[in-house]
Image 1 (cartoon, rainbow, N blue to C red):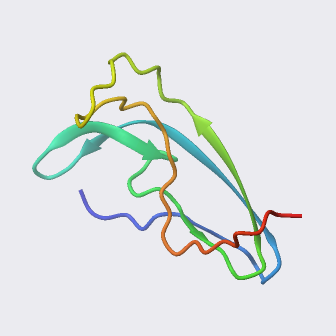
Image 2 (image 1 turned 180 degrees about the horizontal axis):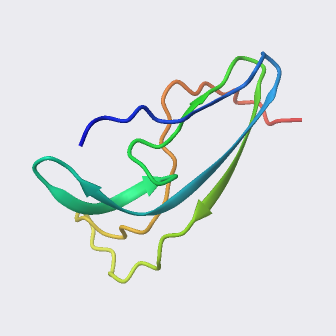
Image 3 (image 1 turned 180 degrees about the vertical axis):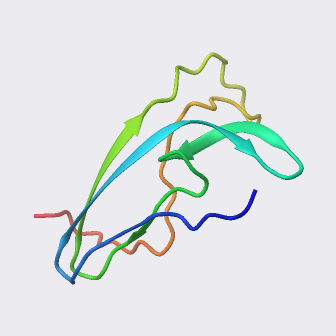
Amino acid sequence: ADFVEPAVVQSPFAGSTVTATLTSDAFRYEGPTSQIWTRAYNGGIPGPTLRIRRGDRLEVLLVNNLGPNVDAAVHNTFHSPNTTNLHTHGLHITSESPG
């Protein structure tokens, strides 16, 4: 499958509130050499790009449409495929508590 540029959510100007909804769900990847079930945000891989400027406020609504985990967690093995977390790059936040 050809790469599709992900959707971009960004603020119109510094100091804005950026609101994003991320929906996590099972996703069937159909590639040129493999087809697999995986997890995706907003129906695609990769999920949307969030571009946030210094001084912006980010509000994320996470909608988890994944089913329950049916396996028992075994240390150092692939498990709990329906557990969700958010992975970020370049997100610098202060150690001070907000407001």
